[in-house]
Length: 347
Length: 75
Image 1 (cartoon, rainbow over the protein chains, first blue to last red):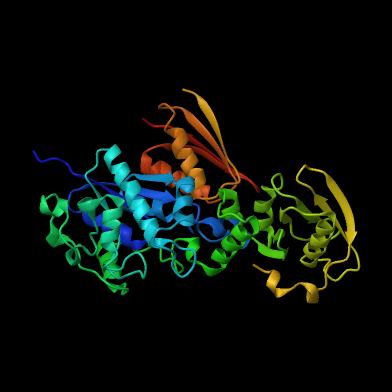
Image 2 (spheres, helix red, strand yellow):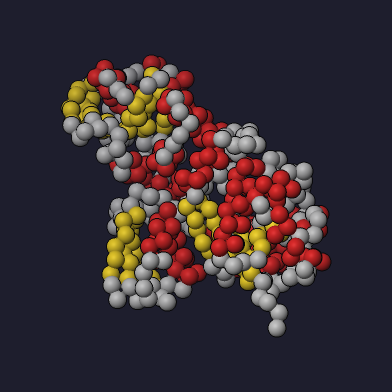
């Protein structure tokens, strides 16, 4: 009786990893999924916060993929370990703060560790040669293999025929002839394969799966590091970069102004960690303050916050300033005229 | 059989699932875990995780601010 071979599949929630895992299942391989959470994954976040998005159906696409495949999915928090990947990427950043190649190496390395600890035989990814400019260039795929330590136990079923045979292929655990030869940015072969398997409602994220590929988000992250004079962050920091308007009127502090009710609710959860401003006399957003503020700064920030309230054109607005220690102060202020809100304050 | 609670408020998808997954790994069959979340995405994600892993969703409640999901551990 032959040994049941087992593969761990990196499941992102996108189509490619879904197809790659399915190809292995069809070859009789026992597959379990692994999904890494860095804190920067696009999956669900903004949709979960903003009230206007509440009507949209929500799902975690990695869980959805696993359910379609009928496999277990292990979601692993790598937030702390990922900091070093982002802060010190050996291979540098992409167009924004995305360290895609280092990220892929790190995730495959973690998958290798998981494989070894759990008695699995090889790793599957949905990578396709030439599909992405940084992490999937043909000359860089071997770098992932080498630096992750996966060596020849890393199988890319969607483009395996374009690559050297791996151990599972050479040993006959899987049939190389049944693997694919996809390459480049054309998605039609994947879509055709999805249709063949009957996958219809798969995720097609327009902006990729990581906030770090987004220019606006990357700008806010760089601003955070510059303001704190250190390249470090906590999960709360990077979550807050996804929410609200961020304005920095002075180098030593910034405002995070909610844009609607859902964000207001989300930011309320941080009121004990950050000083805040609430407009008492009119409807308006909750504003968090990040930095060390003087008394004058608090009053100026309240005038900015009032600008985003229903009292924006009133002569006087009453605001409640809550300090980090919980002390509250009620102040009457004049909203800052829109002409005095400088474009360069917006991060 | 014991009942446990888990506070996953002010965390966003997939953290409520990760916290649930990690807590359930410590529990015994038939134990129940009551998870409180503020991310409405938990209403779909935690049941999906339970279906994949063979655990049972006993109840789900949603009010304006919170979602409470009770999961029973299946061996």
